[in-house]
Length: 242
Length: 211
Image 1 (spheres, helix red, strand yellow):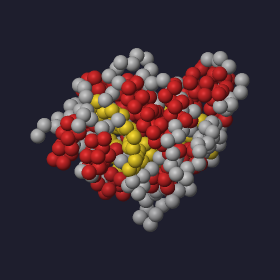
Image 2 (cartoon, one colour):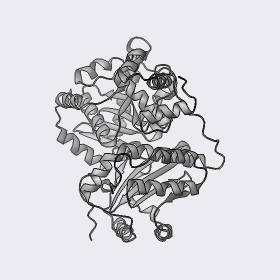
Image 3 (tube, rainbow over the protein chains, first blue to last red):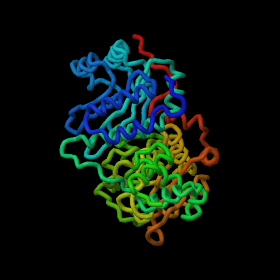
Image 4 (spheres, each protein chain N blue to C red):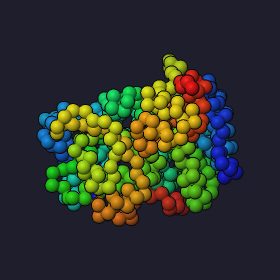
Protein backbone atom coordinates (compact mmCIF):
# COMPACT_ATOMS: atom_id res chain seq x y z
CA UNK A 1 0.00 0.00 0.00
CA UNK A 2 1.07 3.56 -0.53
CA UNK A 3 3.33 2.87 -3.51
CA UNK A 4 1.69 5.65 -5.38
CA UNK A 5 2.98 9.09 -4.65
CA UNK A 6 0.57 11.93 -5.33
CA UNK A 7 -2.47 10.72 -7.20
CA UNK A 8 -2.82 6.99 -6.97
CA UNK A 9 -5.14 6.87 -9.96
CA UNK A 10 -4.84 8.74 -13.16
CA UNK A 11 -7.23 10.82 -15.21
CA UNK A 12 -6.86 8.04 -17.77
CA UNK A 13 -8.56 5.64 -15.39
CA UNK A 14 -11.47 8.03 -14.96
CA UNK A 15 -11.78 8.44 -18.71
CA UNK A 16 -11.75 4.68 -19.16
CA UNK A 17 -14.46 4.46 -16.55
CA UNK A 18 -16.61 6.92 -18.39
CA UNK A 19 -16.23 4.99 -21.63
CA UNK A 20 -16.82 1.57 -20.06
CA UNK A 21 -19.20 -0.35 -22.28
CA UNK A 22 -19.24 -3.79 -20.70
CA UNK A 23 -18.77 -5.66 -17.46
CA UNK A 24 -15.36 -6.74 -18.79
CA UNK A 25 -14.35 -3.08 -19.05
CA UNK A 26 -15.42 -2.48 -15.45
CA UNK A 27 -13.53 -5.56 -14.35
CA UNK A 28 -10.37 -4.36 -16.02
CA UNK A 29 -10.78 -0.85 -14.53
CA UNK A 30 -11.31 -2.16 -11.03
CA UNK A 31 -8.08 -4.16 -11.34
CA UNK A 32 -6.27 -1.01 -12.42
CA UNK A 33 -7.72 0.91 -9.47
CA UNK A 34 -6.62 -1.85 -7.11
CA UNK A 35 -3.06 -1.62 -8.43
CA UNK A 36 -3.05 2.17 -8.37
CA UNK A 37 -4.27 2.30 -4.78
CA UNK A 38 -1.95 -0.54 -3.86
CA UNK A 39 -4.57 -2.47 -1.88
CA UNK A 40 -5.24 -6.21 -1.93
CA UNK A 41 -8.78 -5.94 -3.27
CA UNK A 42 -11.45 -3.66 -4.61
CA UNK A 43 -14.93 -4.94 -5.21
CA UNK A 44 -18.03 -3.31 -6.59
CA UNK A 45 -21.12 -5.14 -5.48
CA UNK A 46 -24.60 -4.30 -6.64
CA UNK A 47 -27.83 -5.52 -5.13
CA UNK A 48 -30.97 -4.37 -6.91
CA UNK A 49 -34.44 -3.99 -5.43
CA UNK A 50 -35.28 -7.59 -6.34
CA UNK A 51 -32.27 -8.82 -4.40
CA UNK A 52 -30.37 -9.77 -7.56
CA UNK A 53 -26.62 -9.44 -7.24
CA UNK A 54 -24.03 -8.35 -9.67
CA UNK A 55 -20.46 -7.43 -9.18
CA UNK A 56 -16.98 -6.98 -10.45
CA UNK A 57 -13.85 -7.13 -8.40
CA UNK A 58 -10.60 -8.72 -7.56
CA UNK A 59 -11.64 -11.42 -5.09
CA UNK A 60 -10.62 -14.92 -6.15
CA UNK A 61 -13.20 -17.03 -7.98
CA UNK A 62 -12.86 -19.48 -5.16
CA UNK A 63 -14.01 -16.90 -2.61
CA UNK A 64 -16.82 -15.58 -4.79
CA UNK A 65 -18.31 -19.03 -5.30
CA UNK A 66 -17.84 -19.83 -1.65
CA UNK A 67 -19.63 -16.59 -0.73
CA UNK A 68 -22.58 -17.44 -2.98
CA UNK A 69 -22.66 -21.11 -1.97
CA UNK A 70 -22.78 -20.29 1.74
CA UNK A 71 -25.22 -17.46 1.11
CA UNK A 72 -22.90 -15.15 3.04
CA UNK A 73 -24.93 -12.19 1.80
CA UNK A 74 -27.33 -12.92 4.64
CA UNK A 75 -24.74 -12.70 7.39
CA UNK A 76 -22.06 -10.45 5.91
CA UNK A 77 -21.95 -7.50 8.37
CA UNK A 78 -20.67 -5.28 5.57
CA UNK A 79 -23.77 -5.83 3.47
CA UNK A 80 -26.12 -5.87 6.47
CA UNK A 81 -24.55 -2.79 8.03
CA UNK A 82 -24.26 -0.69 4.88
CA UNK A 83 -27.52 -1.57 3.20
CA UNK A 84 -29.90 1.42 3.09
CA UNK A 85 -27.15 3.68 4.44
CA UNK A 86 -25.23 6.46 2.76
CA UNK A 87 -22.21 7.02 4.96
CA UNK A 88 -18.82 5.41 4.25
CA UNK A 89 -17.93 2.75 6.77
CA UNK A 90 -14.76 1.18 8.07
CA UNK A 91 -15.31 -2.51 8.73
CA UNK A 92 -14.29 -1.96 12.35
CA UNK A 93 -17.43 0.11 12.85
CA UNK A 94 -19.68 -2.82 11.98
CA UNK A 95 -21.21 -5.38 14.30
CA UNK A 96 -19.15 -8.57 14.09
CA UNK A 97 -20.31 -9.87 17.45
CA UNK A 98 -22.44 -12.82 16.29
CA UNK A 99 -20.85 -16.22 16.00
CA UNK A 100 -21.84 -16.44 12.33
CA UNK A 101 -20.24 -13.07 11.58
CA UNK A 102 -17.02 -14.02 13.33
CA UNK A 103 -16.70 -17.28 11.50
CA UNK A 104 -17.47 -15.51 8.22
CA UNK A 105 -14.67 -13.04 8.99
CA UNK A 106 -12.18 -15.83 9.71
CA UNK A 107 -13.16 -17.52 6.48
CA UNK A 108 -12.71 -14.25 4.56
CA UNK A 109 -9.27 -13.64 6.06
CA UNK A 110 -8.26 -17.21 5.20
CA UNK A 111 -9.28 -16.56 1.62
CA UNK A 112 -7.02 -13.53 1.40
CA UNK A 113 -9.66 -10.82 1.63
CA UNK A 114 -7.59 -8.96 4.19
CA UNK A 115 -8.15 -7.98 7.80
CA UNK A 116 -9.13 -4.42 6.97
CA UNK A 117 -11.92 -3.02 4.87
CA UNK A 118 -13.62 0.19 3.93
CA UNK A 119 -17.00 0.25 2.22
CA UNK A 120 -18.85 3.04 0.51
CA UNK A 121 -22.59 2.54 0.13
CA UNK A 122 -24.20 4.09 -2.91
CA UNK A 123 -27.87 4.75 -3.39
CA UNK A 124 -28.89 4.71 -7.00
CA UNK A 125 -32.25 5.33 -8.65
CA UNK A 126 -35.32 3.17 -7.95
CA UNK A 127 -33.97 1.38 -4.93
CA UNK A 128 -30.71 0.40 -6.57
CA UNK A 129 -28.04 -0.14 -3.96
CA UNK A 130 -24.35 -0.75 -4.43
CA UNK A 131 -21.26 -1.12 -2.32
CA UNK A 132 -17.76 -0.16 -3.32
CA UNK A 133 -15.30 -1.86 -1.04
CA UNK A 134 -11.55 -1.84 -0.57
CA UNK A 135 -9.86 -4.46 1.57
CA UNK A 136 -6.31 -5.02 2.61
CA UNK A 137 -4.05 -6.84 5.01
CA UNK A 138 -2.22 -4.35 7.21
CA UNK A 139 -2.07 -2.78 10.64
CA UNK A 140 -4.84 -0.56 12.00
CA UNK A 141 -2.62 2.51 11.83
CA UNK A 142 -1.65 1.94 8.22
CA UNK A 143 -5.28 1.42 7.31
CA UNK A 144 -6.62 4.47 9.09
CA UNK A 145 -3.86 6.58 7.51
CA UNK A 146 -4.79 5.23 4.10
CA UNK A 147 -8.54 5.75 4.43
CA UNK A 148 -8.06 9.18 5.97
CA UNK A 149 -5.88 10.23 3.05
CA UNK A 150 -8.03 8.88 0.24
CA UNK A 151 -11.56 8.82 1.67
CA UNK A 152 -12.79 11.80 -0.32
CA UNK A 153 -11.45 10.51 -3.64
CA UNK A 154 -12.72 7.02 -2.91
CA UNK A 155 -16.24 8.30 -2.26
CA UNK A 156 -16.20 10.09 -5.61
CA UNK A 157 -14.70 7.15 -7.51
CA UNK A 158 -17.28 4.80 -5.97
CA UNK A 159 -20.07 7.01 -7.28
CA UNK A 160 -18.47 7.40 -10.71
CA UNK A 161 -18.14 3.63 -10.84
CA UNK A 162 -21.81 3.21 -10.02
CA UNK A 163 -22.81 5.69 -12.72
CA UNK A 164 -20.90 3.63 -15.26
CA UNK A 165 -22.42 0.40 -14.01
CA UNK A 166 -25.91 1.90 -14.28
CA UNK A 167 -25.40 2.74 -17.94
CA UNK A 168 -24.77 -0.97 -18.56
CA UNK A 169 -28.21 -1.92 -17.26
CA UNK A 170 -30.49 -3.27 -19.96
CA UNK A 171 -33.08 -0.67 -21.03
CA UNK A 172 -30.97 2.17 -19.74
CA UNK A 173 -30.66 5.27 -21.82
CA UNK A 174 -27.11 6.33 -22.56
CA UNK A 175 -26.01 8.85 -20.02
CA UNK A 176 -27.04 12.39 -20.77
CA UNK A 177 -24.64 15.29 -21.01
CA UNK A 178 -23.74 16.52 -17.50
CA UNK A 179 -26.47 18.85 -16.39
CA UNK A 180 -24.46 21.82 -15.16
CA UNK A 181 -26.50 24.52 -13.47
CA UNK A 182 -26.22 28.11 -14.73
CA UNK A 183 -24.12 28.98 -11.66
CA UNK A 184 -21.78 26.05 -12.19
CA UNK A 185 -21.34 27.03 -15.85
CA UNK A 186 -20.49 30.61 -14.82
CA UNK A 187 -17.98 29.42 -12.25
CA UNK A 188 -16.18 27.03 -14.59
CA UNK A 189 -16.13 29.56 -17.42
CA UNK A 190 -14.48 32.17 -15.20
CA UNK A 191 -11.99 29.65 -13.82
CA UNK A 192 -11.19 28.50 -17.36
CA UNK A 193 -10.34 32.07 -18.35
CA UNK A 194 -7.75 32.25 -15.61
CA UNK A 195 -9.64 34.04 -12.87
CA UNK A 196 -8.68 33.22 -9.31
CA UNK A 197 -11.29 31.89 -6.93
CA UNK A 198 -11.61 35.21 -5.16
CA UNK A 199 -12.07 37.00 -8.50
CA UNK A 200 -14.75 34.49 -9.50
CA UNK A 201 -16.53 34.95 -6.19
CA UNK A 202 -16.35 38.72 -6.59
CA UNK A 203 -17.62 38.69 -10.15
CA UNK A 204 -20.56 36.45 -9.30
CA UNK A 205 -21.20 38.25 -6.03
CA UNK A 206 -21.07 35.09 -3.98
CA UNK A 207 -18.74 34.16 -1.16
CA UNK A 208 -15.81 31.83 -1.68
CA UNK A 209 -17.60 29.46 0.65
CA UNK A 210 -20.58 29.24 -1.72
CA UNK A 211 -18.22 29.12 -4.67
CA UNK A 212 -16.65 25.97 -3.21
CA UNK A 213 -20.02 24.26 -3.10
CA UNK A 214 -20.76 25.07 -6.74
CA UNK A 215 -17.31 23.79 -7.72
CA UNK A 216 -17.83 20.58 -5.73
CA UNK A 217 -21.15 19.95 -7.45
CA UNK A 218 -19.72 20.74 -10.91
CA UNK A 219 -16.79 18.40 -10.30
CA UNK A 220 -19.16 15.59 -9.45
CA UNK A 221 -21.39 16.13 -12.46
CA UNK A 222 -18.32 16.17 -14.71
CA UNK A 223 -16.86 13.11 -12.99
CA UNK A 224 -13.72 14.96 -12.06
CA UNK A 225 -11.68 14.67 -8.89
CA UNK A 226 -10.21 18.14 -9.02
CA UNK A 227 -11.08 21.54 -10.42
CA UNK A 228 -8.47 21.59 -13.20
CA UNK A 229 -9.79 18.29 -14.43
CA UNK A 230 -13.39 19.56 -14.23
CA UNK A 231 -12.57 22.67 -16.27
CA UNK A 232 -10.77 20.60 -18.90
CA UNK A 233 -13.68 18.21 -19.19
CA UNK A 234 -16.25 20.98 -19.42
CA UNK A 235 -14.24 22.60 -22.23
CA UNK A 236 -13.75 19.31 -24.01
CA UNK A 237 -17.46 18.55 -23.93
CA UNK A 238 -18.36 22.02 -25.09
CA UNK A 239 -20.27 22.78 -21.88
CA UNK A 240 -18.36 26.01 -21.45
CA UNK A 241 -17.00 28.25 -24.16
CA UNK A 242 -14.13 30.65 -23.70
CA UNK B 1 -27.94 13.11 24.19
CA UNK B 2 -27.55 13.18 20.43
CA UNK B 3 -28.64 10.15 18.46
CA UNK B 4 -27.84 9.63 14.80
CA UNK B 5 -30.57 7.41 13.41
CA UNK B 6 -31.63 6.36 9.95
CA UNK B 7 -35.40 6.24 9.46
CA UNK B 8 -35.40 2.45 9.53
CA UNK B 9 -33.82 2.55 13.00
CA UNK B 10 -36.44 4.86 14.52
CA UNK B 11 -38.82 2.03 15.31
CA UNK B 12 -36.47 1.00 18.14
CA UNK B 13 -37.18 4.38 19.77
CA UNK B 14 -40.98 4.69 19.65
CA UNK B 15 -41.22 7.61 22.07
CA UNK B 16 -38.52 9.56 20.31
CA UNK B 17 -40.09 8.84 16.93
CA UNK B 18 -43.61 9.93 17.87
CA UNK B 19 -42.50 13.07 19.67
CA UNK B 20 -40.19 14.10 16.84
CA UNK B 21 -42.94 14.01 14.23
CA UNK B 22 -45.36 15.76 16.62
CA UNK B 23 -42.81 18.47 17.38
CA UNK B 24 -42.29 18.92 13.66
CA UNK B 25 -46.05 19.41 13.22
CA UNK B 26 -46.00 21.91 16.06
CA UNK B 27 -43.12 23.89 14.57
CA UNK B 28 -43.80 23.78 10.85
CA UNK B 29 -47.61 23.67 10.83
CA UNK B 30 -48.79 25.35 14.03
CA UNK B 31 -46.05 27.91 14.64
CA UNK B 32 -44.73 28.69 11.15
CA UNK B 33 -47.78 27.94 9.03
CA UNK B 34 -45.80 26.07 6.35
CA UNK B 35 -47.88 24.01 3.95
CA UNK B 36 -47.00 20.64 5.43
CA UNK B 37 -49.03 17.47 5.89
CA UNK B 38 -50.07 16.56 9.41
CA UNK B 39 -51.68 13.14 9.87
CA UNK B 40 -54.49 12.07 12.22
CA UNK B 41 -51.97 11.44 15.00
CA UNK B 42 -50.78 15.01 14.77
CA UNK B 43 -47.47 13.99 13.15
CA UNK B 44 -45.83 15.84 10.29
CA UNK B 45 -44.12 13.79 7.56
CA UNK B 46 -43.28 14.37 3.93
CA UNK B 47 -42.10 12.30 0.99
CA UNK B 48 -38.43 12.75 1.94
CA UNK B 49 -38.99 10.91 5.20
CA UNK B 50 -39.72 7.85 3.03
CA UNK B 51 -36.21 7.89 1.55
CA UNK B 52 -34.59 6.52 4.71
CA UNK B 53 -32.87 9.76 5.63
CA UNK B 54 -30.44 10.10 8.50
CA UNK B 55 -31.87 12.04 11.44
CA UNK B 56 -29.74 13.83 13.97
CA UNK B 57 -31.84 14.00 17.12
CA UNK B 58 -31.46 15.59 20.52
CA UNK B 59 -33.04 13.14 22.94
CA UNK B 60 -34.12 14.53 26.28
CA UNK B 61 -33.50 12.61 29.50
CA UNK B 62 -37.12 11.37 29.48
CA UNK B 63 -36.66 9.86 26.01
CA UNK B 64 -38.60 12.52 24.15
CA UNK B 65 -37.47 14.60 21.23
CA UNK B 66 -35.83 17.95 21.97
CA UNK B 67 -34.75 18.88 18.47
CA UNK B 68 -33.69 17.33 15.20
CA UNK B 69 -32.63 17.70 11.61
CA UNK B 70 -32.86 15.45 8.59
CA UNK B 71 -30.00 14.62 6.24
CA UNK B 72 -29.96 13.20 2.71
CA UNK B 73 -27.17 13.03 0.14
CA UNK B 74 -27.68 15.35 -2.84
CA UNK B 75 -26.93 12.50 -5.25
CA UNK B 76 -30.50 11.35 -4.66
CA UNK B 77 -33.81 13.17 -4.42
CA UNK B 78 -33.66 16.33 -2.35
CA UNK B 79 -36.03 19.11 -1.44
CA UNK B 80 -33.65 21.80 -2.69
CA UNK B 81 -33.23 20.22 -6.10
CA UNK B 82 -36.93 19.47 -6.46
CA UNK B 83 -38.52 22.57 -4.98
CA UNK B 84 -36.02 25.39 -4.50
CA UNK B 85 -33.97 25.31 -7.66
CA UNK B 86 -34.81 28.97 -8.40
CA UNK B 87 -33.12 30.01 -5.18
CA UNK B 88 -29.86 28.31 -6.13
CA UNK B 89 -29.86 30.05 -9.51
CA UNK B 90 -31.51 27.22 -11.45
CA UNK B 91 -30.29 23.67 -11.90
CA UNK B 92 -29.28 21.32 -9.14
CA UNK B 93 -26.59 20.82 -6.53
CA UNK B 94 -25.31 17.24 -6.66
CA UNK B 95 -22.39 15.62 -4.95
CA UNK B 96 -21.84 12.76 -2.52
CA UNK B 97 -19.82 15.32 -0.55
CA UNK B 98 -22.77 17.71 -0.18
CA UNK B 99 -25.71 16.62 1.93
CA UNK B 100 -29.05 18.29 2.33
CA UNK B 101 -30.21 19.33 5.78
CA UNK B 102 -33.94 19.94 6.20
CA UNK B 103 -36.65 20.05 8.89
CA UNK B 104 -34.38 21.66 11.46
CA UNK B 105 -36.75 21.55 14.39
CA UNK B 106 -36.64 22.59 18.03
CA UNK B 107 -39.23 21.38 20.52
CA UNK B 108 -40.94 24.01 22.65
CA UNK B 109 -39.12 24.42 25.95
CA UNK B 110 -36.21 22.27 24.93
CA UNK B 111 -32.98 23.03 26.76
CA UNK B 112 -31.12 26.10 25.46
CA UNK B 113 -28.13 24.25 24.02
CA UNK B 114 -30.21 22.06 21.71
CA UNK B 115 -29.68 23.93 18.44
CA UNK B 116 -25.94 24.16 19.10
CA UNK B 117 -25.77 20.45 19.95
CA UNK B 118 -27.41 19.63 16.62
CA UNK B 119 -24.99 21.83 14.72
CA UNK B 120 -22.08 20.27 16.53
CA UNK B 121 -23.36 16.82 15.61
CA UNK B 122 -23.65 17.98 12.00
CA UNK B 123 -20.01 19.05 12.19
CA UNK B 124 -18.98 15.65 13.52
CA UNK B 125 -20.59 14.05 10.48
CA UNK B 126 -18.76 16.43 8.14
CA UNK B 127 -15.45 15.65 9.76
CA UNK B 128 -15.85 11.88 9.78
CA UNK B 129 -17.77 11.29 6.59
CA UNK B 130 -16.13 13.79 4.25
CA UNK B 131 -19.16 15.99 3.90
CA UNK B 132 -17.86 19.34 2.66
CA UNK B 133 -21.15 21.28 2.79
CA UNK B 134 -24.72 21.05 3.87
CA UNK B 135 -27.31 22.72 1.73
CA UNK B 136 -30.19 23.53 4.01
CA UNK B 137 -33.83 24.54 3.85
CA UNK B 138 -34.88 26.38 6.98
CA UNK B 139 -37.21 28.81 8.63
CA UNK B 140 -35.73 32.22 7.84
CA UNK B 141 -35.93 33.21 11.49
CA UNK B 142 -33.43 30.47 12.34
CA UNK B 143 -30.65 32.54 10.80
CA UNK B 144 -30.52 34.62 13.97
CA UNK B 145 -30.23 31.49 16.10
CA UNK B 146 -27.56 29.95 13.88
CA UNK B 147 -25.58 33.17 14.10
CA UNK B 148 -25.79 33.23 17.88
CA UNK B 149 -24.60 29.62 18.04
CA UNK B 150 -21.57 30.51 15.92
CA UNK B 151 -22.37 28.59 12.75
CA UNK B 152 -24.15 30.74 10.19
CA UNK B 153 -25.15 29.38 6.82
CA UNK B 154 -24.61 31.52 3.80
CA UNK B 155 -28.16 32.32 2.75
CA UNK B 156 -28.56 31.82 -0.99
CA UNK B 157 -32.10 33.14 -1.09
CA UNK B 158 -35.53 33.08 0.49
CA UNK B 159 -39.15 32.58 -0.45
CA UNK B 160 -42.36 33.73 1.14
CA UNK B 161 -43.09 36.42 3.67
CA UNK B 162 -43.41 36.78 7.42
CA UNK B 163 -43.32 33.73 9.63
CA UNK B 164 -43.63 31.32 6.71
CA UNK B 165 -40.53 32.71 5.02
CA UNK B 166 -38.26 29.84 3.92
CA UNK B 167 -34.54 30.20 3.23
CA UNK B 168 -32.00 28.06 1.45
CA UNK B 169 -28.41 28.25 2.57
CA UNK B 170 -25.05 26.54 2.59
CA UNK B 171 -22.96 25.52 5.55
CA UNK B 172 -19.33 24.80 5.83
CA UNK B 173 -17.92 23.96 9.21
CA UNK B 174 -14.51 25.28 10.03
CA UNK B 175 -12.50 24.33 13.08
CA UNK B 176 -13.11 27.81 14.53
CA UNK B 177 -16.85 27.46 14.00
CA UNK B 178 -16.72 24.09 15.70
CA UNK B 179 -15.01 25.51 18.78
CA UNK B 180 -17.62 28.28 19.02
CA UNK B 181 -20.52 25.89 18.57
CA UNK B 182 -19.10 23.49 21.15
CA UNK B 183 -18.96 26.37 23.61
CA UNK B 184 -22.59 27.39 22.88
CA UNK B 185 -23.74 23.80 23.24
CA UNK B 186 -21.82 23.28 26.46
CA UNK B 187 -20.75 19.91 25.05
CA UNK B 188 -17.14 18.81 24.81
CA UNK B 189 -15.72 17.46 21.56
CA UNK B 190 -15.07 14.25 23.50
CA UNK B 191 -18.75 13.84 24.36
CA UNK B 192 -19.97 14.44 20.83
CA UNK B 193 -17.36 11.96 19.63
CA UNK B 194 -18.74 9.34 22.06
CA UNK B 195 -22.30 9.90 20.85
CA UNK B 196 -21.14 9.61 17.27
CA UNK B 197 -19.40 6.32 18.01
CA UNK B 198 -22.42 5.08 19.91
CA UNK B 199 -24.50 5.43 16.73
CA UNK B 200 -21.99 4.61 14.01
CA UNK B 201 -19.59 2.25 15.74
CA UNK B 202 -16.13 3.00 16.89
CA UNK B 203 -13.59 3.36 14.13
CA UNK B 204 -10.10 3.44 15.58
CA UNK B 205 -9.93 0.14 17.44
CA UNK B 206 -8.97 -3.24 16.10
CA UNK B 207 -11.27 -5.89 14.79
CA UNK B 208 -10.91 -8.55 17.43
CA UNK B 209 -12.00 -11.74 15.85
CA UNK B 210 -10.46 -14.44 17.97
CA UNK B 211 -12.92 -16.88 19.42
